[in-house]
Length: 410
Image (cartoon, rainbow, N blue to C red):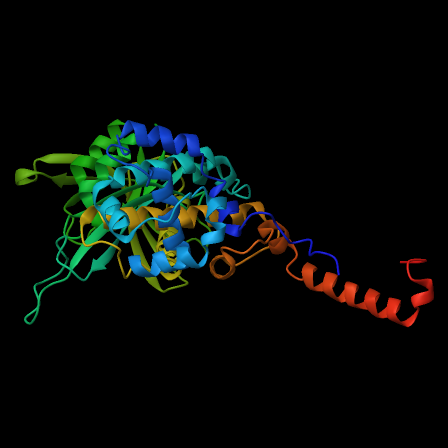
């Protein structure tokens, strides 16, 4: 019987990490002096082992080492020349800065950004749209300050907040910052000023900061968010609203928002009242862009849901419930590698023509991670190997019936 066409000389894991440039990892390691006092467990080795943890879904260092031992004869394919000890692994998670892993994520993202863009997105405004939000990861130890009130009984759990920006044309984070869970979201607004002039960004009411909104206007960066119920403002010029009966726009006007001590400072904005007939709900949007159509503003805010789906995807497929270290650095390393694993699988998904649910891709890769399978060949034609088996069985059966003409026609 012939070999399966899906056989590959490298495990699936190796095919995933080919998206990572080893020379770039070494460069980042040098910039952060990440190899100081290191004998064997280099930054690249550390990265590969942590990706192994994320992709396999391991929950402890002991479980990780056993998983590596079970695949000891395949580790050379991954560039691992030796098996790390538990103590060395734990020490590396504590000592090697999580910033190194953040820069590696950024490097992989930037290198493959073009292949992440959705070619079906034709709207020029949505192509320059960014979405910002945060998600909180609860910790069972009081490593970082948690959110909410102190419980009457027991100790409040710690928590880490991942402040994230994504491009609407992609589905992976392009910028991430971590903070204690109690840190207010609006503190992250300063990162928005890194966007290019003319960019549009949308976020929820948790980022309210009128002083920052005014600074965004001066930088020609356009925001779209919702108006807080207790906002103090003065209505001004009214804009024409669509006459289309199906339009949900009820009001479109220029407003002045007051803020600062004694409400003496002013921010010129635009208020749009919009009726969402699908959910029977009234929304009040504000933006510093006076040119876009009111319905486009509503559409932009609706796109904000995209980042919520990304957080759901990350938490469902790479659940961060158990950490390999009880310090902030180790936790951030594990979050960065989970995001990198998500990015690698997203890149695979983009290269395959056949439509796959992301969760199904993760399941296949997780189950077959260290097996020698041509990942792309299998994903394009999952039943191809089985058809080859049936074909070989039929050929063998025909040859057994007519041994005298074996090889004459087949």
